[in-house]
Length: 532
Image (cartoon, rainbow, N blue to C red; front, side):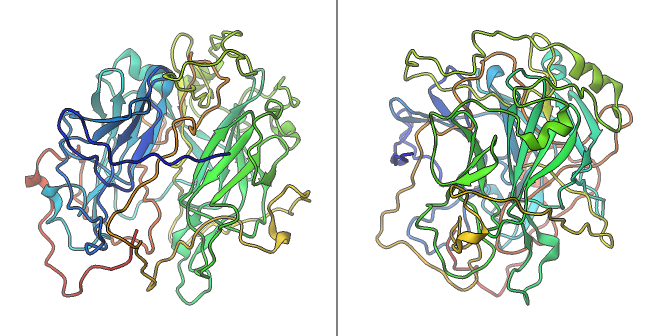
């Protein structure tokens, strides 16, 4: 695998504007036929304003930027939205050219209009709603969600939420339909800051969502070597049985805040993130990248482009009632369907083009202006259009009563062969230290460059059809029988955030700065001087 660096500092040719330097935003793949990548949301880092590359926050006028990978050119787009959010949950439906950005926040670094919202980067204002981005015509709309409630129970992995994209496509002025489905099996411990990818059986009879890593910030204890519980494990949610299976546990190199991507025929690559212990060790050998073979469930450090196609792991046969090539016979959840309308969605036959969905990559070279299509989870599909967005991914939330913490569980570790990166290798496996504490470090020199991976490194393989695949997304239920609540999460930081500046009641997206909370008095202590 080769990672090429592309200079970021190419200006918008029509305005001469440099793209903003942001964190906690999201890069979207965009439509399969587009040569652009799409950057939405983000915030300016305000923790070290003495950093040579520090820039003041930009206005939120252009929350969406596109980068053309063939020219290369940046362009900015006004979506007529009041804010550029960050720390939200995101996914997309590539075949429809739609992106989804759930909740998020505004903070000190969001915009020139929010500089008075707080005097340190741990203060923030939660945002409600889900933004639907149309990359075909550069428009956006907001789907309302309930407001955040104080001291409310959080959602754990005993239930997942499903958004029916087709219900939105049929009536874009509506909020769409949400369903919540109970799960069973090896329920993962509560966590945030993990990642997921999805794979389907070769015959599309079952679908499997791989969840890796994460942390539980509620267990924070500065007196311990590990400041909070973090995980080096893999759980799989199989559909349509909605059953969790622990397929890799007991790893010795926990990571959180990383990203996962499906590459090649059956590998999951994990990139970046944080490690728990501040031991000063850098992962120069593995460069912050690891590969999981999702069929054999073995870890390695090498990309295998010529391996055979994905097969359902043997450990999942019991929850599918099938074999490696598919033939799943378990067609409904063990606890039954929570909502019969969701059953209808899953029982609707999928339109299948055998030629375009061939598991083998085409022999004819794809034109350079095209991008490979992401075959996101086809958990349930509505004929003719995208069906269901299954609620998992970076936006899984967990449910925990304050006095009833769910303790992590570990299954017996499996034997690993010489390709596995595991506990018995006696070395750090993954990331750069994730805890800054009092160890600031700045790059030398006055010019700072940011690296971009080429567009081929996307969360997709090149084998799935551009037709009618579903996407993944999480939120709470709007369908009959659903439970009220609101999904919300934060991405990695060095400390737990201060309580949000909460305003009770339903909270549509802020429309102007007059709706911001009162300014917080300036603190006597200067901002942290650590670098991002």
